[in-house]
Image (tube, rainbow, N blue to C red; front, side, top):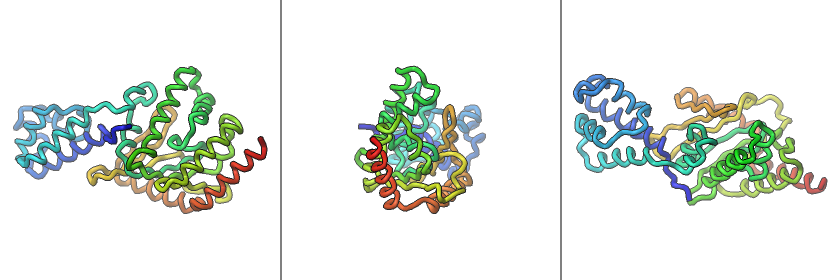
Length: 287
């Protein structure tokens, strides 16, 4: 079972707490550094998550300077610093997740809203479908493809754990007409997708060809939302080699509006389930 804690989010939260404590105490980053006989960048790095590890002594010095005396708050900040050093399950797949960011954020997300234009989204894929995708790409090493497949299957656990992530997935109709792995692989993939779509915390909507042009004709993306009030949403835009992560308020709002537009173009969850069922019947009759 996965540990539902994100080291990156805990570090992000600690950085926000330190910045808020400094501002409440009336210090600038430069003044705080001068008081502690540190270089100014040291304080700034702690508040922007550039410092990946904050040791307990430095944290105590900052809290003393900022007059953070409440024992519960002090222990909470130390707990965040400890959690930020935890190695998640994805560290075993460091060759797959180049910077480990997406599974790190996913593990503590409460809601994911995703749009995919060409393939079934990774969290809803079967092992054979995933392998076929990698075989169709440039990942020619069997051992590398298997490692990538295992890592993607591990990511799926956020949908089946206690208190699972709520997934809102919109998939362009193109993904259903691309026979990844052949008819048999697609048949099992669509059956799995239909099964997952019937779970109460998962909504799947199909965006049909008949809608023509729509707001999603750019690139797939995921909006990650988190339960803690200090953890603001993040947008993940996959790239060929990694992913782009957007945290600015204007970017988040733009992607939320785009998702809303795409959702308005998609057919309902019930209609989508009927569409997937018909695709399954078509594949079964052809076999």
